[in-house]
Image (tube, rainbow over all chains, first blue to last red; front, side, top):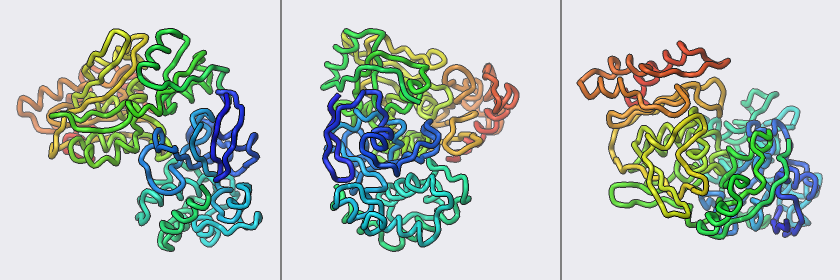
Length: 193
Length: 269
């Protein structure tokens, strides 16, 4: 089936099998490897990306910015037809505008404030959960720009980290919130999308 | 893990979806958020030949007041129910229950109708609908009918949906200011209830104490007869035959039902 999906601001048209999962589409068809396949059972959140409908239909609440967090192991690519999808690669502003394949600083882009906060607070250890954790945090902050620590912990309930014990991750999200991430995120999403 | 091959059709309207259901029969499954169906398909516990996507039909999405009821489109995601000012004001137990489903990502995709149709007895929304005394409006080729929550759940993952029918809307009574309680016991984040209890206006529903969400009728009767919350809660497990698994044996589930019912009756969220 032919699908039209805007991935990190870049419009694509691809012929996919209906059973192709969104995470496999992103990794294998688009070559974007930030979203990881962890548990593959809608639990761990390593595959978290943002999704936004042209009409904000199926994905919910019309929150501003790049969309709402979804677990891409449990979304069919065909369900994203006509929608915008943002991966961690698309968060870094320059990377996204230079073709959607940017990988933060390595790709020449400037880190998104949430990414920068994860680096600043060392909100990672092995890094496997990090792209999903960052995307979940971006979605959380777009819905609740000034969360309490408890709200951050609850808001990241769908993302597992098996290294850090979460403390630095929570610190990173709180740091991103207090750095006024809300407004910056809006701006970046417009560039990215 | 990858689902078995299937054909995918995005329905253009509920009428179109019903026509497709009619022509494909048992080979077809309805897809909305897919957060119950796709995991089953990935494990090949479900292998439908055709998926009919109703998840983006605007006819099935939205929340409105209709007299003394709230009407919620079946494809409305949990996140929208949980954060709706209308639901929070007029059916806070429902808003709270929707906010307990899975985790944020799951609530962005999963839908109220999908959760009810899946009918997992351990799930949040079936229990909430039974506690609230809500109902579901079903659409089929022969027209529409409305089924009370108590009659909708008929067995383990079974409902009174007939082949060719879909859930169009979910209705719950508007009860602003009603006191309510909701308790879910889990061992892990974003897990299903080992046992759950929800109470509002003298009605008590239990999750995972049998093949369907159940009313704790002996406890309800005791309340109606003037018993205290603690006295009534002692009767919460009467007549139940809960299953056993690695999380809990039968006696422990009955114990949990009594404890959680007492807490729910004390109106603790």
